[in-house]
Image (cartoon, rainbow over all chains, first blue to last red; front, side, top):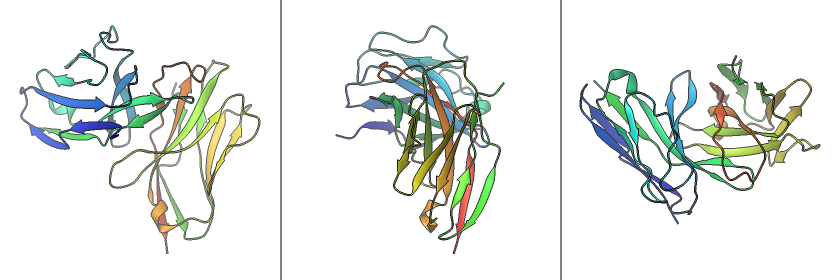
Length: 111
Length: 118
């Protein structure tokens, strides 16, 4: 029972390249979320999905998401920009408090 | 307006002393929850403690306690008897809406870096 896993741990991209950050959970939770963490900014929500087959209606610019099944919630950078350099954290809530259970993160650098 | 405010970018404390990390929040919801997370240099996010808006007692978990003052909208984390391993970034966060709602994302503060010296 690994909880939430993310791959890769680290990656470097060039501006304009595309990439998919992988997130998987084995807890059979409906909701999954993506946050990004930047120095001095805390964690900021990028996107969430309530269940397989659903995603929030507004996708932030530069990102694309899909939720084909309960387990996987990939985040795609369509055409990477230096402003997307960040640590990306995938999470899902646990009951009863709905605190977020986080994956280990992906540290992404866009040059 | 920020929903979670952590006014202390950094804090220093000596080993074995107590330290308070400040957090104020802003919400119009009656039902909400407040969390503290620890992030050591390894990067993992570790859940520390939780306080529900209807909980009358302050939450405690070992050396961690949450000083919840609802009228002042503050949820300070108190770490007693600091240890070197407590050196880390600490984040305050809030869930708006009831427990067991099946959904939540959290709003996070910007964090406080705690350094514990021998």
